[in-house]
Length: 161
Image 1: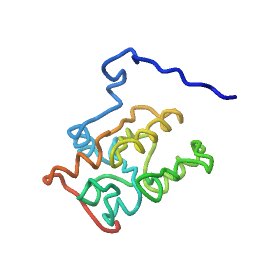
Image 2: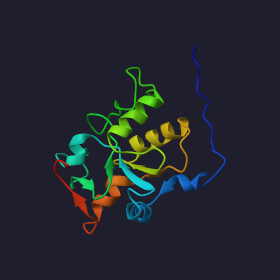
Image 3: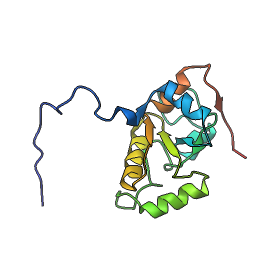
């Protein structure tokens, strides 16, 4: 049926209740130090964003990917997440997501930290990982937007081997 929303004034907390789910730039760098052993920094952006063909955002000039991250797909552009959703925009079957990750070299038994351009795509994939019962995963919520603002942060462009 139709549910009419009821506005609320307060969510009951001024700080995130699950701080361990969110890492900052330094946290992402720590993940990269252990990358491919027990942790992975997973890029949830389009292929064209990943290879540096486009930034995906009108307000971001720098293009490319975080050196050492692995690609986890997302969709065809920065406003879509069709690689993780069914045609009706519901979450794909978890086994399909795990199979896709396996083909990309992503082991779901590792600690996965997801990032995208501004955070919403990666946050949705983090939620999906929790629905699938995966543990110890996190969100680098400022992702490419923050990383690309610091010219000393290493980036790569082009097609990967």
